[in-house]
Amino acid sequence: MSSETPSKTAKLTIGDTTIELPVLEGSEGEIAIDIRNLRNQTGAITYDPGFGNTGSCLSNITYLDGEKGILRYAGYPIEQLAEQSNFLEVSWLLIHQSLPTKQELAEFHREITYHTMVHEDLKRFFGSMPKTGHPMAICAATVGALSTFYQDVKYDDPEDQRWEAAVRLLAKMPTIAAYSYKHSKGQPFMYPQNDLSYPENIMHLMFATPCEPYEPDPVIARALDLLLILHADHEQNCSTSTVRTVGSSQANLFASVSAGISALWGPLHGGANQKVIEMLISIRDGDRSAKDFMNLAKDKSSGVRLMGFGHRVYKNYDPRARILKKSCDEVLARMGTKNPLLEIAKELEEIALNDEYFIERKLYPNVDFYSGIIYQALGIPIDMFTVFFALGRMPGWIAQWLEFHRDADARIMRPRQVYTGERERNYVPVDKR
Ligand code: ACO
Image 1 (cartoon, rainbow, N blue to C red):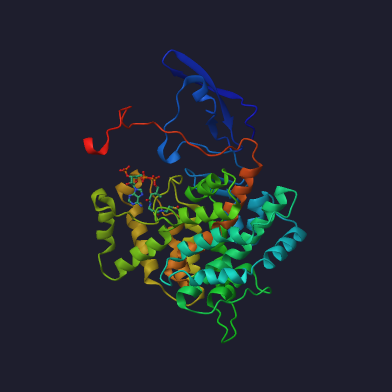
Image 2 (image 1 turned 30 degrees about the vertical axis):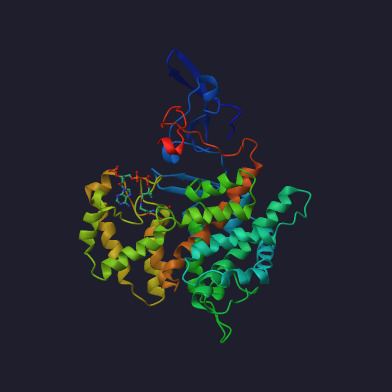
């Protein structure tokens, strides 16, 4: 795709002035009106709260078609990657937009493995935060603090510097995430184990103790790897746009991603996975029936939403939710457990998919609807769910941040506004008001 050679134009008339605007076309045929010169030519700006119609960049990383329920990383369908790939390979794919050769993958694996430890001084950082603090807050603070440990500029080429930051972040995030959990439990921090795979190491860091040997369960490790793959990127969502926005001021990768973690935490974004389980538990514990809950979710004055449902872009079933729903059944069956919350979730989905309110608004389960049930089966505590989302999203944030820095069109992000406040008036001293 090129912004240089538009094949179509759009005409816009404001008052007596008509201008022609270039129309860009993406590789999947999506069209975008290039308004970069709109204000220069007409004095007008566009108004688009929530940026529902605004393309902030050209990107080669992820394609999604919300109407058809399609998600592809660099052209590869999410279903194929979920079935055949693994998280580290997907991370490389997102960052380079091509699958690694055997050698490249082995080297990447080695690089990640040898950067998993955190500086011993960073461990003390956890002790200064309350044990009851939410792990997302702890992770955001700790990732931001990495800038203080890795401030050295040792490469002439900024690309090499950025690559090293990217490897460090991807490698250290499981250690940081697990330490936020260990801190809350008052348990000793475990060192990473270099002979374990990426997801096995996460399980080890979370659940091993120095008192006895710990063998990560391969079924759990594979289920976790699948969750990480499904969360790895989702183009210009709230947290990714935050990472790009912060990075656009030339803030470093750690500072940019720390802001992304904070954005992800909100219940309308990644924080929904925690809220879904809390919602299902409240129904299980008899606070109200599934039907009563659904009535409440349809009543705008209640302030209640069916968490894990609806999406800004998907107006069809989220393909990640489809994979996860199937995976819930498989994981629970292989682990020989049952979870009544899965039955409640399926009941809520059945009601929603047959209810006019949800049909009319095209509200379907999103990635957060079923993920929590698998996290629970894997033994992940509820307040760590969103941290696991952040672990998965890390390669996407990194890839998008790196792409921004290579983009010749990239500028500091600085939206405009339509001012609706008071017009000019004179200051009145306080004793005269
Ligand atoms: N339950 C009940 N009603 C809903 C829901 C829901 N989960 N989601 C949207 N609606 C309704 C809205 O009230 C609105 O109704 P109206 O047209 O009558 O006013 C309509 O559907 C459109 O909703 P908006 O909020 O305008 O849609 P938007 O694109 O701004 O928001 C969002 C998308 C935030 C995901 C929303 O659907 C939501 O709050 N869902 C629940 C939270 C959630 O699951 N978030 C995770 C999203 S996936 C992710 O970030 C990883």
